[in-house]
Amino acid sequence: MSFTLPKLNFAYDELEPYIDTKTMEIHHKKHHAGYTNNLNNAIFQTDMENMSIEKILRRSNIEDHKIKNNSGGYYNHNFFWKILIPNKKMTDPSEYLIKIINNSFQSFNIFKKEFSSIAINHFGSGWAWLCVNNNNNKLTIISTNNQDNPLMLGIEHDHAGYPILGLDLWEHAYYLQYQNRRIDYISSFWNIINWKQVETNYKQYIK
Image 1 (cartoon, helix red, strand yellow):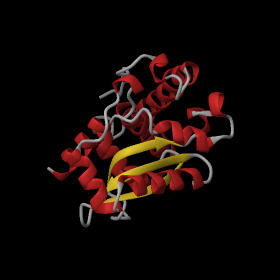
Image 2: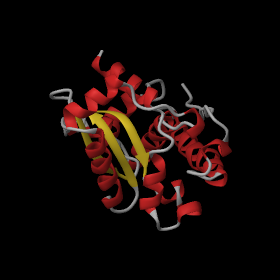
Image 3: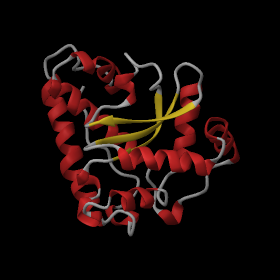
Image 4: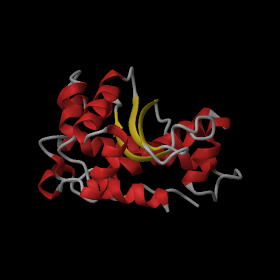
């Protein structure tokens, strides 16, 4: 098996003005492509060569750093692109999803504030995630360093769970447009979330 760079469901300029065209092009063509190529090279002629990305992630915490970093980078970006949508196509979360969120955070606004706070206060490169808790199916918010993700953490930390929403906090995701203003980038993120995909992610887990 050879992993491939996925096509996006939108053009590079369709997330404007929230994420600029140049950032999207570099992020996809350079950074994500780099993780894809490096992952293929790292697993070539190993017992992971024919594994799914999810199976690799669940082993990556005990493998070398090259496999861990690039499998995470490949999966995380695949996940991220799917939960982005041009603002003109964006719809509000369904009543079903709002109820799920409210059951865990009392209200959507509280959830939004907690997620934004964790993303803003994460030190250095990494990701913010909304996950389904493995123990009780409630939603929880965590952040991870570098290209780590909840599927890796799930081996040792059951509270991490399964990701249904994620935000890239690496500087390459926003620096051309926002420079050091991560808070503005996070604020813009709420304008381009594909809530239908978030709900699909949740339903896939609870099956």
